[in-house]
Image (cartoon, rainbow, N blue to C red):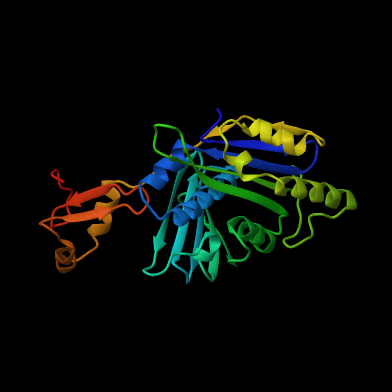
Length: 300
């Protein structure tokens, strides 16, 4: 499994664990559905890679939702990963100049990380300001402020050109964290790197991850295992079984019909165009058609 997968790993016998993500058809499907400008597509691809690595680290069934909201040309960036490998992502744009690149498209704002444990369970949510030169640095700042977990992240998004075929989007990333041992506990905010040995181990890992180049994260000829060996062969690295990732949206006509049922007749009337109500999912861009009364229509 070389692509569209998440690859967990552990550096030697240390407390450093992480994930490598490689997305090809999955991210191409997500981005092609939107036809965003390239710089926005790149930002969405980074968010999708980040959400996948963070979500795969969860030890329970549920969903991780990454959101970034700002006052820039991209008003909102959203990606969510559901246990089992379902991934979706999108962005909302404001009218105006989108000549900026990367995280500058978001402007000033905040990052919201939500962990949804499922029905009848309380959601966990962390909020921090958008900080850093790119989305990877913003994620590192989030973990430092909200979780107090040492984290290092590298993200890359680009197009793969093949003669005679249309360009296709690819995305990749690597994230490593220094985590407490199994059963280890600590007070919130307590320094996790308590010993000089811990600090030395983490400094090495962070430096090695920082050397990962975009082509190493994106090139289909460079496997995740090869990348991990390049980075950590001096310390040893254990790669665990990869987990598949797929582009999948949770939208459906029944959910949308339930929402429409809350509107009055006048409000439904205002939604009618060409004799029908059309609702397009912001994530997958699938269209749903309803009668002026808000009932599913059999004729799109």
